[in-house]
Length: 204
Ligand SMILES: [Zn+2]
Image (cartoon, rainbow, N blue to C red):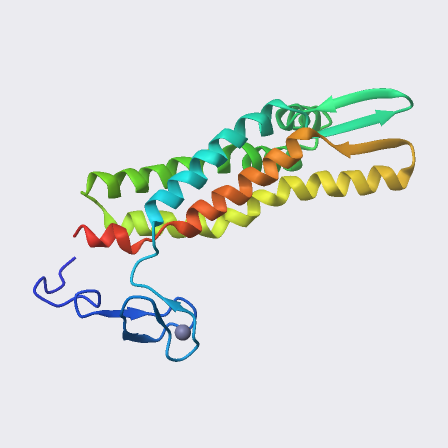
């Protein structure tokens, strides 16, 4: 970054931009935006702590989300329980390769990737030295963008439930893992939202 190092940052100048409407204005403690009235702060309060707390919750939820059945089917009196990975294997064996790949990516790979990236960024703030700031910020934007897409798995279950119920041959109910999975997606998203990328740049 070839910027002028002597230049005053907005924070040093006592300025902050509104998170809602983007207006740059002088920021005193407990101030509200002069344009839209929302709370004004230079950095999200307790950003790192909140982000860690949500991330750890998500990590804990990841375990039951994968160990317990995501759906319970009863077909002609025969009960069947499927975990996420069990469902992926079933879909693969039914030659539904694209669906199997989508579910595997959305519910196993992406959550792990997100855990990895968020903890990496949190660690680099904690250690105080941030190497490739542009890259780290871009990485975070990607995570932020794909966040809601993890919910695809929950939607697949809902869709399957609706489809099979409609057919009337079998009953499908979301398994105990569905709640854990939804909770994991939400807490990971909250962890990303709590994270203030500007903290990465503060160490510069
Ligand atoms: Zn505003």
